[in-house]
Amino acid sequence: MTISNLFMTLNNFGMVFPPFSHIYAMSSIAYSTYADKKIVLGDSYKEEVRLLAQNVMTETKSARKIDPTSRLYDYSAN
Image 1 (cartoon, rainbow, N blue to C red):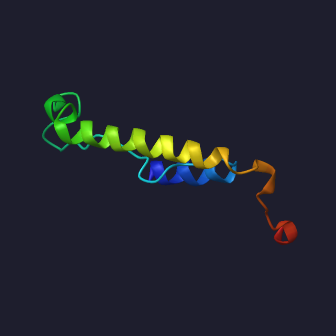
Image 2: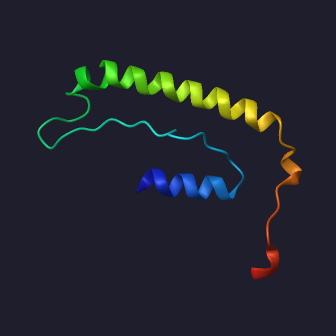
């Protein structure tokens, strides 16, 4: 829920997020994230970070092609 709220708020201020740009550690009740370090440093997280880096670069290249002042907003509802 925290990530969703941050994304929605920051997006309303004009921040752009690449797809699948959320990475977080999943811990269990028995083990905290700190104690479960081997999972956080495992291959699955390395792959997630690699894909995130690719998505950030793709989004950056796409954003360069768009004039930021061309985005429109309907102010009639305010």
